[in-house]
Amino acid sequence: MRQDPFETMVTFMCAQGIGMGLIRRQVSMIAERYGRQIVVETERCIYSGHTFPTPDALAAATVSELAVCTNNNRVRAANIIAMAQSFVSGELAMICAEAESCSLDKVRTSLCRHGGIGMKIADCIALFGLGRFDAFPIDTHVKQYLWEWFGIEAARKSLTPGNYRYLQETACSILGHSYAGYAGHILFHCWRKEIRKMKQF
Image (cartoon, rainbow, N blue to C red; front, side):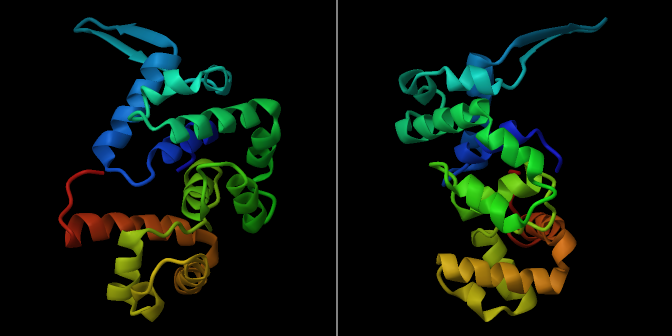
């Protein structure tokens, strides 16, 4: 929560349809290739790492260069570059600045205008990067616990846009609109760790 908005956007755009190991690898490669190297020396060791790239750095990237970091997914690379350019132009930066004071629907709609950002990714960006604890992202795991723990029948159906919004509204009415996303994320981790016995987060 309260992560850097630009970093959150790039990270979740890298996260579509792949596992945690590959997501971390892509983000690390992007930081190594486009970020600034930092070296920290202590009495015991020297640590070398990279900052996350600035919007300008990714906006200036080429699709071929960035695709090396996105598992050769050129569409993903192109979407990230276009998003970074939108951030540099001020369009996305303005959305970030206004996110906490305008409606969640306006935030979602503005984010979804950009390639590679659908409803779930927009809600993830809003929740983790824009301080919107009322955003409630839904994926397979969330659907599963909404059915198993809350008995919401619609959670057994396909995740169409209409059903996505219905499940959001239903979940928010149960968990409370103001902090539904925050509560949902705790339940998400409990489901994965305690019920599904998953080890990667």
